[in-house]
Image 1 (cartoon, helix red, strand yellow):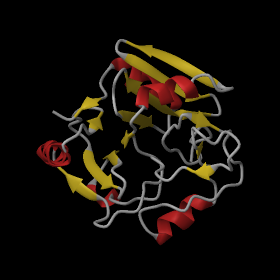
Image 2 (cartoon, rainbow, N blue to C red):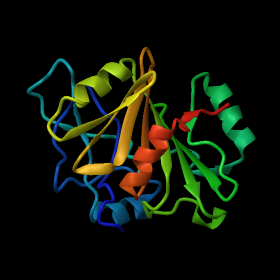
Image 3 (cartoon, rainbow, N blue to C red):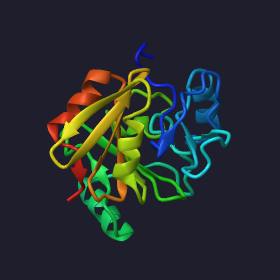
Image 4 (cartoon, one colour):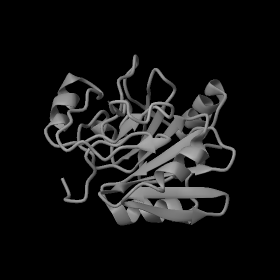
Length: 209
């Protein structure tokens, strides 16, 4: 794993605490995947907006490890991604078509959707956090959450034409953004921090057509 790879990543809340240096994620595609990731991954954590002194709760849907799913991860076509978005009745974000990529989709019970860009279908469910991943998180106050997180120590911001992106300097391989008025928060993860930023800055991350 590259030295700049994130520990585990997840949705940015209205208020973020610092990453837990010894946390053990409880999510994954399978028990084997959880065990593989638990050795070295650290989660972003959430605290409730109305409980500023509450104990932090581990993020429940990391983009690097992926959440549990009743159906498990699956390979889909571009048409399959479009159909998924239509069935859900809400946007599902991706980084656009890539002719050399295989698209893996994982859905969580709470409505989060993860699109991973694999190099072959044999990598389906791989425990390795080596793939560009675009995660869509339903958040009623998505833009306000990003604004609040951008004020935390270590936060770095990227201005977007219709929104705001941010990442923490300790976990630069995950970039989060939301558009004004949106109820969707998006995380772009790459094992390369530079690629994660470039993908967000390029404007390629859009709802699946």
